[in-house]
Image 1 (cartoon, one colour):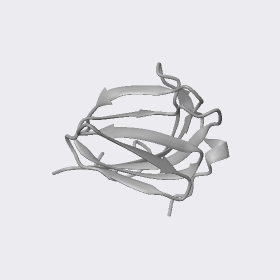
Image 2: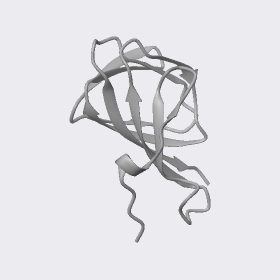
Image 3: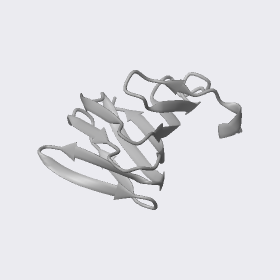
Image 4: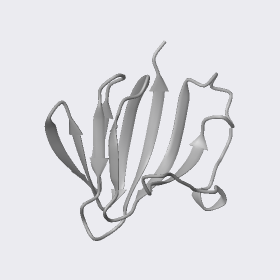
Length: 110
């Protein structure tokens, strides 16, 4: 068993302002097929459209994140989860006045 504590993991702040902490990815024997982390979206964060080669799962811990996929906008709040299939272009934003925090998981397709 590998246990990782969020407080012990350094966050990497991306160019778009999102602070990402990698719980599991390079440190685990998953052959690069599964990664999991913690993200903080500060107020005003806008993540430009992108897609992934794996399925993305997210669980909102606090705050709100708006996500647009296929021309449809969804607002996710604390206690809600999302699934974005591999290859689906999506964008995210936090247009509130508080941080939005979430746990994400990416599972690569074979």
